Figure 1 (cartoon, rainbow, N blue to C red):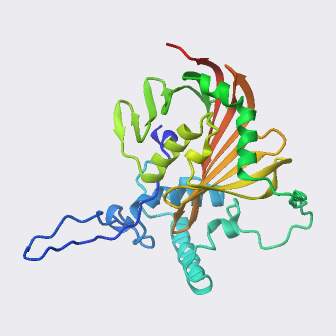
Figure 2 (figure 1 turned 90 degrees about the vertical axis):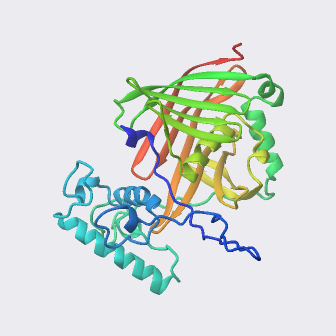
Figure 3 (figure 1 turned 120 degrees about the horizontal axis):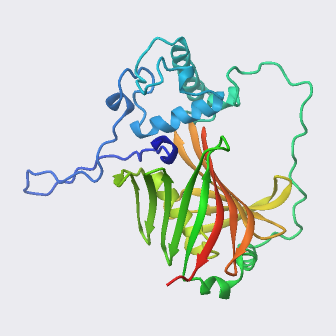
Amino acid sequence: MKNKIKILAVAVICGVALLSFAGSRQLAQTANPPVETAGQKFKNIKVLNDMPADQMGKVMNMMSASLGVDCKMCHASNDKDFEKDGNEHKDIAREMIKMTFQINKNFFEGKTEVSCNTCHNGKERPVSTPNLNPTEHATRPKQPDVKPTIDQILAKYESALGGKEKLAMIKNRTVNALRLEPDGKTIEPETVTQSGKNFRVETKYGNYVAAGIFAGKGVKKTAGGSAIELKPDEAEQIKREAQLFANADLKAVYAKLDYRFMDKLDGREVYLVLGTLADNSRERLFFDVATGLLVRRIATTPTVLGAFQYQVDYSDHKDFGGVKLPVSTRFAVPAISWTRKILDVKTNVP
């Protein structure tokens, strides 16, 4: 159950700086603790020993999604006793990882250009023969004669949401929604509350309650009444959801916004905008050319096997209290996805 609500994260690789002072024999505390490796934290690691331990979940999810399989494909048991050997597919996977590292080292200067998905593309076995009935590849639409400016894109987005005055009138809102799991049958009640910069998402799994909270600056997550340790990118995604929820002031969120080009998404023309954050990481934002609404956001986190992608799709926008919200919001990471469906919204409740 916890696997459903927890998005596996990536470690921040940092050096240890030792500061010395003249006349003193004492060393100052290190600026950052050393990174724990997978070889140090987990048992029976034979290939990914030097990988930051916090990348393990992400890498396993990426391998699962790249081959279209689950944990039982490689692991001898399905009781979370993952260190056990006895499944030949685990040995094969180890050799494939070695091969992938070697290809990137020898041909791409160590950059993660090749990953499991490069060959498998969602299939258990790579397809070595070309498809003789290929589907037509989508081509980019004709680019506008005059490129839109970021100010024009954001102004249209603000207008599409309801306009500056109506946005300013909303002091708080409570959203009752449902969380739909990929099977289409499993549903959990979800409540989103927003007041100023404070934001909370609460999901109920029976008597088990999980909550992601952004309180203006700080981020935390709880499950079953206990705090969950958040990795940097986990906290960042909770923060970003709060910052972008019915908010047109994206210049206050991103340090820099750059228009790239016009593309197509699900048959509709969209503007692709790169949003650069204060730490120089980037996110891709897709705005519907016709409506002006934000319809997709993509963030990535680097791992030893390539970028771990976090994608949010916004659709079916409807008016709630004078401001448009996406009735359907789909969240997806490799091998995991879920959808929030809004039922009703109460605004400006004392």
